[in-house]
Length: 121
Image (cartoon, rainbow, N blue to C red; front, top):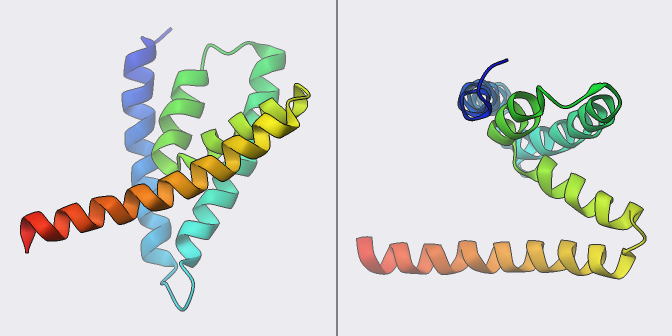
């Protein structure tokens, strides 16, 4: 069995290259369709693989989930975390996690852009 860190590194490279391919194949026209497609597809595959690996053992989880899907989109991991909280009966926590993650991530992007513009202007 491959070292889990090596699995993540190899998978991350595969996922990142796949994401680039999607971005080149689907031009942004009005909405960022490539990002939308990557996030939705990654979430679907994350759900399928997490269910499969839960039944058959997770020896390849670092390669498939953290590596490939993490390189393809981190939104898939976020989606799985939110659904896991929901399935554990922690609906309020799941909603707080979703709202907080989206809001704080948007604010973080804005803050980073402001800092970057201030530094590099």
